[in-house]
Length: 355
Length: 152
Image (cartoon, rainbow over all chains, first blue to last red; front, side):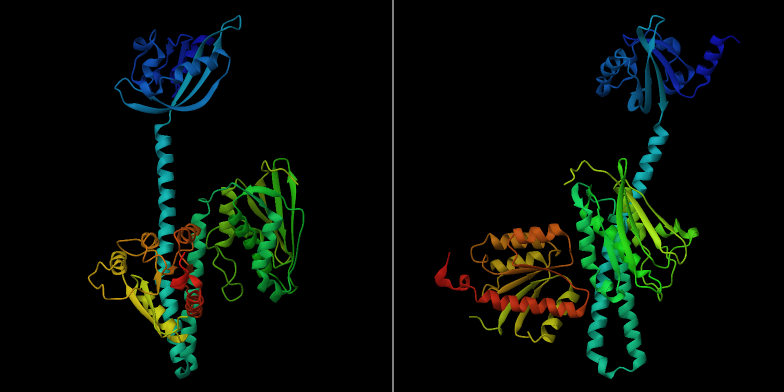
């Protein structure tokens, strides 16, 4: 086989349509995949205008494509709609490159068209499923809250009325109901914030120093109780959702306090800039996380300790992860058992002027 | 100045449990003299307030407690209707809702609500809420705007 035959074999066996056209948009070659994808034979298409394939509401694309080709530009994976011979529409991804003659003058274009109908359908299905799941979580959480609120209120009212007549065992039962309903309330609220995490707008200027100050205010009781020492310095201003930044730092600092060892918690929040990314660390001297759990702890409902030792719903870090994904960042932990933990997360450097 | 006793309160609430909590909370904090009428849907509430229900002999309430999520006519529309009516405008409306959304809170105040409370999950908080509502009422009733001679 000479070189030309090899090329022809490659073109013919491709599963993508490979088409060439001149600068007037007239088709000059048409491979087998093009026949299969668009339904026209090579004999039908060669010599005809490429606009044969373009639905009327997409006709304005062709002059733009030609204009870019004339400037020597390539069109890479442009997703659009084309029309088959039988009139049906297909979703394709187009890559168009200018073809030059031996003098370097652009004389036409080669066009690779991939049928992305199945891929698009799959993407749409995935998005539908994710949306449905989120809506379900949201509605379920809302509808679960109301009956729970009533259980909690009635049992408290019952207790206050008959408290004097209750033996210690009965009091314990009531306490269990009250505690269980409180715990379920927290679970529902956390689940709700998890399902909302990627729905919030990211557009405000947020000073993370101020966020940490607010968080420390909210955590005042537990800080006093545990004697925690928390330092922070030089945190950036970023473009973010203020509520979620508060939630993120409250979860991380709250965890750093909660999972303390024999010593009082000592926590440091710091930041450094690495090119276009801020890396923010929350370092503690607590019980640490064994390396085999470093990934798992960011999953919903994943907990490493019993309710009795360290209470919680197992949603906090999952919410952190989702908030950061929503902000275009990442989160991870460096830690080993008994040696404290450093949670680090990244956020893109916004176009905010430093003071 | 209005006495704490004999204050007529209309509570627009479709949830019987919440009406229950309100009554018990009022009783527990010693605000039994609040006469609480509960109306379970928005349409009935409007009819009652505008005297279109045939019970025109019934005097208007001194205050309205309003759940936002009630059947037929939503709470915000009731609020709007009251604030655009000459003889209902001066009745203070306090919203009592499960919603913590800032939009619901802002909307309510923009429409003229005098207060906004989220329905508590804790009974002690419930009592506190109603104590605040009672105190608010006494406070509000001393304002000069309640005096017919100083109408604006």
